[in-house]
Amino acid sequence: MNLNLTLIGQMVAFVCFVLFCMKYVWPPILAAMAEREKKIADGLAAADRASHDLELAKHEAVERLKEAKESAAGIVDDAKKRANQIVEEAKDAAVAEAARVKASAQAEIEQEANRAREQLRGQVAALSLAGAEKVLGAAIDHNAHKELVDKLASEL
Amino acid sequence: MAAAGEELTVSGYIIHHLTNLTFGKLPAGFERHLDDGSVVHVPEGGLWTIAHGGAEASAMGFTAIHLDSMAWSIGLGIIFCLLFRHVAKKAETGVPSGIVNALEMIVEFVDNTVKDTFHGHNKLVAPLALTVFVWVFLMNLMDLIPVDLFPELLLMLGVPYQKIVPSTDPNITMGMAIGIFILMLYYSIKVKGFGFVKELTLNPFNHWAFIPVNLFMEVVGLLAKPFSLGMRLFGNMYAGEMIFILIAALFSAGGVWLIGAGISQMAWAILHILIIVLQAFIFMVLTIVYLSMAHEDH
Image (cartoon, rainbow over all chains, first blue to last red; front, side, top):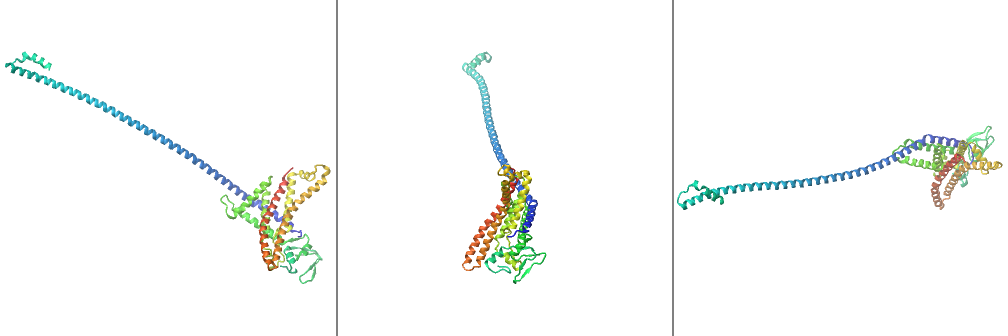
């Protein structure tokens, strides 16, 4: 329990250790810790940013998908419209063609009928003349009775 | 166990454990009582030697040094420096592991305590606090080593006395406290200048007639700080060590006492784990607080 030179010795040792700690221990440890803290903070910030970016990308993807769907629907609509149009056109064309064919057929029929009628008329005239000849028993002057026969034929 | 020249009694055992290995100068004419009972007078000019017993150590006065306290204290200080220097070199920005992590936790703890308590700008305070905390803790930690281990081992090697807990030596604790006191005075004068004189003379009664009263009170208050700082640590550790020694002495009673001694040894050691950390923490916090007060201008 005596106070002696140990007191001074301890003071000197104390100063030495504190100086050592101040120079070689404290600054590097604190610097490393501060740097690590910064690194971790940066890492967290980067993670935040990345998740934000991901969110944006997702949003954009949804947007794009929606656009694509819309444009696909538009295309399908257009195609349907176009198909309908084509069908309509085809129908119209068919109707027109049918009408044309019908008209030409009718014209031909009429022509045929007229021709037949003309033929019939000629034959009727010849027959009438032949009949009359037989009835009269004499030859009929074709030229003299032509007018009469033609009149008869046109009445048929 | 008693050294040569002391009886093998409980009180001799305790005294032996509480005596430092003292090297110093015996004054001329001092009577040395040797082991064989003869008396030798120290010759003219004194004698530098290792003291045998408390009486010789006292006779050496101030010109003596406690070899054991100094060796353990400096040894532990060097361990502190090597440990933390190792960490300082290894500390990187990556994931810390093992000892680096553990010691960085201590550094961060000290740093936070300093930041909470000390508001000035001083690069010295935090490293000082770290040194004080870890060093005092290591010195206190020696208290948990069985009291007989080192004294007995060294006795076999011919070293008569050994006190391995430096913080049970008032020289050690007061040495640190005085070091801190000098820093307190230095920063008080540096930061406050003449304000420090005002603080000593015009507080608490702000009138010139009260200057002697104020001065007396303030100086007592100022001196009480390092004294209480050093003595608190010393008192706590000395008392704790004393109890360990008493428990160790109880073992010599034998028989049923062995059980009681064993239980109390364990209980006291467990309690002491708390005490050694607490005392180191208190020493550190008071160091910071005192230096903080020295930096505060009123």
